[in-house]
Image (cartoon, rainbow, N blue to C red; front, side, top):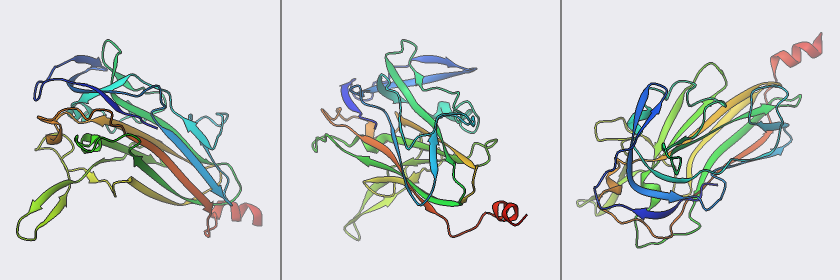
Length: 272
């Protein structure tokens, strides 16, 4: 799980630029907030099979170890990041690959973005369906401070065709008070700056996203990559003090069962 505890906050609206060379691109760090993982795993992935035979793997190689639980490696504390630096590499294997790594600051004392890639594999003889969710909780929360989830960005890759790198980006909805109705109206947040695309909205305060996969055939696999960062351009991070002692916990949960659909390839082989 990601356990993000604020440990410092620079003066409001003061941005410290740290330039890091990644491939051919220079990435700008917005250093307003730094976070500490308290040695907790940044991400946990839990698979529950009910009549299905799915498995998790950290590599696409057939001989890669299979498991029903994965624990991501720890990283240094997080610092705010300018997500615009991702635009030129988001749809490539520079991020969406088991070979790519989490991005740290040049001094390696802070995390700019965290990424983790894994595979869901059908190791059984039956077609399987499953539902994946990315859940969020607040093990420590100071209600007087702003919510860390307000500036969290999640880039979610789900690709059965391993040559593709399609993704969606999620952010917590922006709440605006409507005087006419006397209620708060939710609308999508921008991914980065006010002229960027809008992000998909978190599904709720407890669930960031869900995805349902049907008819994963025997020996098929799907590659997943999760990319997390704290968006330094988000208006919710401007002019506010760090939430002392607050934290977020993120975990992927996968529930699988045998599908009602039949794999045509398997059926043909059995008939022969």
